[in-house]
Image (cartoon, rainbow, N blue to C red; front, side, top):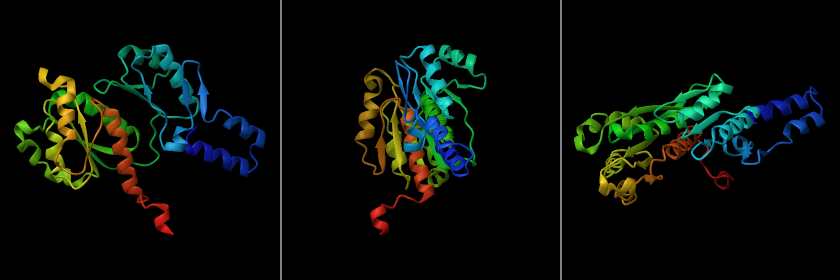
Length: 261
């Protein structure tokens, strides 16, 4: 269940349109739906603001289909990451409106924004080869109802490509910097931006990049303030955190409750 459906159910109970027993029956599966091989967290949208996301890697198509079914039964939004074409075809066989985001390797279903996307998350990449990871971040942030802009292939090898977009960097509420090789892009962006920068190291690079270890260490050791770092190739994690920052900034509710007393 999502917060809106729970609120609607409680309003119907208040108006006498459903009984207490009917309400209890509707809520009894909260917060977990057991599938044997998985325990679907149906309470997460109420607790954390967004539904549980399916990590498809290592799961069979049949397992993913059953998890999707459990999420949709609770009026959830489906975001499935690291999904193969085979898994997508299995999901689309049950839900024809499923969308496959090829570069991001992500599946989305039931994405219905009640309000226009908000704020501005800017995603920049060092090179074209980093785009699949950036696209995973983009899809994640857009599903969570954020406005996303992209600026691809603006790495430090031709830094003028980035500098000519300084106005876009200044406008963004949060920036995701995705880069492989030596990973210097995040430090450069961090030195230009007054907003949080989320650095995503990618496994793109020659042998001594060690599958993303080199850019990871560069980003962790950045001398630019305001940079946080997620794991190698973790576009989903970057998109999720960027959404939390963007939405909190817009709500203006970041002040601690104790400070309001």
